[in-house]
Image 1 (cartoon, rainbow, N blue to C red):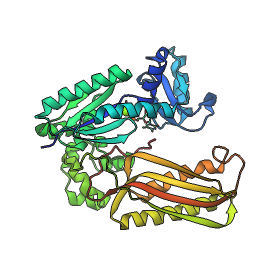
Image 2 (image 1 turned 90 degrees about the vertical axis):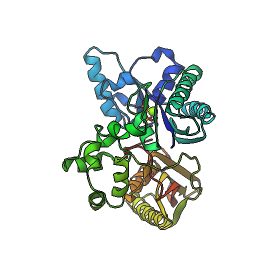
Image 3 (image 1 turned 90 degrees about the horizontal axis):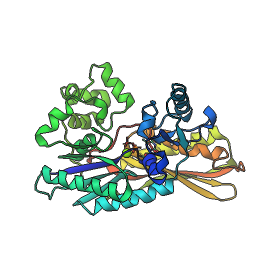
Image 4 (image 1 turned 120 degrees about the horizontal axis):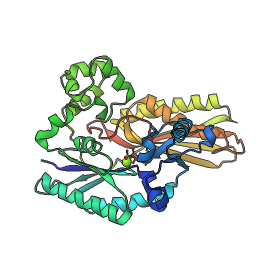
Length: 372
Ligand code: TTP
Ligand code: MG
């Protein structure tokens, strides 16, 4: 019997900013794009819990966050603070926290900048695991001044859902016999892999809770959702065999193309990028992989300067559609001042996927929402 824990830092970027500048504590802090008095572009990376009270959320357009903050101000609530963020700092803090966690587990898996899985199966029971996790939470608070939320369960799926159950500074333990009663009343959206689209699809069919999902036959789910329906059926029953491991396949699948003529024709370049993405995706599947976590694009300009940009998703990326979306997002800055201030023409582009996962492994990540 396994004992698995999942830890996720609370409002991570915002909490690091509050730690650096204590005068921010308890204030509505938003990390993300420059709101430019409501005319900004880009999105919210994260925000403090005080800002969440205004309805502000990760991945929301920064203009919307700005309007919500303005509305709060008009109601007489504290003004929000918009910060650009300091990734190098968040990365440093993350590295220190991961070191604390890794030292305390039989196996350790860094799932994103602010979350990790720990295998604690060598401990005698769930109670001992709870004591261990409490000690880790205390150590992180003591050393970094930060809180996190944790979940303990018989597998990664349950640990992940449990860590999100009580936030911030929560700890939820779900033993074997509690799995079903714990899951049943929850919304299907807590299941990693059920994003807004699948969620809406299932709700239209009268399936809103995990209990309702559990009653649907696997064959029905496969008919609706394809192969992933099988996986979903297992998850609705709280089953997940995926091991805690940092050993991602080193393999990556990538392709590139040099154009006949250097060009800055966005429509053309993005069309070629989509063709590359679909070929890469097909090869990845042909090699027996189900999905990936990291997408990378490369651009070589006419002067041979070559740049690569990557996006690592919290959730496993399982569809070509999602790959294309990421690829387009990654290429976009090369058509404007962000990555191409001199409007140089493009000579070559490349698309690559990394951190591949075999079909046999149940993906263990969060719902398919836009992520960092
Ligand atoms: P999360 O753990 O999803 O969010 P959080 O830690 O800010 O808040 P919570 O208390 O709900 O866990 O993500 C970790 C960090 O990743 C977050 O602080 C900022 C970054 N991030 C983005 O940049 N964009 C996103 O869309 C999301 C969801 C997170
Ligand atoms: Mg977090």
